[in-house]
Image 1 (tube, helix red, strand yellow):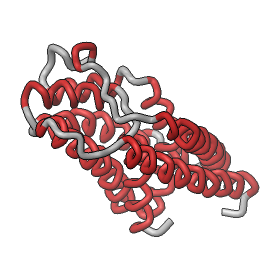
Image 2 (image 1 turned 90 degrees about the vertical axis):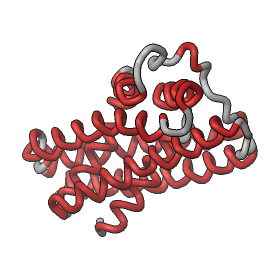
Image 3 (image 1 turned 120 degrees about the horizontal axis):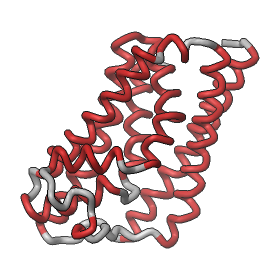
Image 4 (image 1 turned 180 degrees about the vertical axis):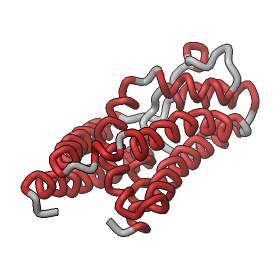
Length: 215
């Protein structure tokens, strides 16, 4: 995969996950209400610490394991399956989607600072582990074809998506205005869901080619 394509698709895939409300979104909402817009980049920083740790482990500690064609193939196929599941779920749920954030009072960041809140909200989400064990691992494997440059481009695109979406929500919360209607939000989810399904096909086909030895 071309380096620029790695960055672009990493951003879009990351954005697809970011727009779905979860623990990180919840603590960002709470921290923004308490501290203002500056909470968004700080929560993202806490989230990014765990993301960077996983990328380093995958690239360094597990790099040789993923280098095997059969392993890379299984990861690609599994990653494609998860992406397809995510994409279909987004498209199917888009009709009833609403940009309503979880009640900040029950978020995992209730009594912590924004950085630690972002970190804790990340590790308590089992979906996060599933994503990195499949889709993330596959992306790291593809990025390693371009060495450190590929890894940096992947991580930059991925974390930039989190920062962009959380910052946008923080602006909305801090201003007290609803800038994004449910209709626009549903459109965003549908488009990104279809994108994930297309990318799933690419991951799945790449995985099959690894297994049969064409790559």
